[in-house]
Image 1 (cartoon, helix red, strand yellow):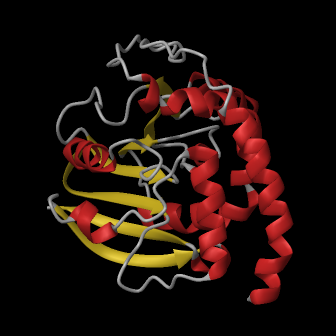
Image 2 (cartoon, rainbow, N blue to C red):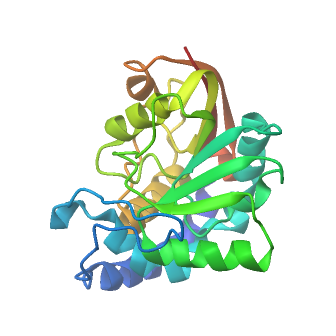
Length: 252
């Protein structure tokens, strides 16, 4: 473990310096209107400058696939297996990013995938179009104020998302609200749990992830779900060193 950690220190430092350069130039304003969905325009609440995750992810979109693709694909595969979308089901994906997870849905599902970043959605649209994916509808929307009815979806999926938002508790409550009773919710994320082992590599990854995307690396799973009408059915470690968890919940 020590050898691995020492080997990645130079890479981490170079990456952090590059990220600092990008982060220091985050001045692009974010529109409060949907500019990505071809079917509707959704008005979003204005966010204060310090609480505009979309501005960062608009700039980060170009590098997103290189960082989030192969190394984190095992987690997506396991999460999709746990979500188990079935024929005719209505599925919501919160935080679709560049569409890496959206390629995995069965053709006969009705999928709505949202993100706040217009740049991310633009890349997602191009990816889905090139793969002729037609069952996924993309919308620009704030995860903390979902424009959907209570219980509208049979399943909700949040991949690598819940700890990147300013208010994870509010987003989790919205995710639970729009899922029907008895429906499934899958979080794919890094969480702190009673079984979490903190080690050097985990700390390094957390440092990089926090600097890149402002994530809350120490998001506590129990505290997140305790106030919600959710039953945690399983928590499975995935990806390198089990640094990420697939959390399957049932809406009560």
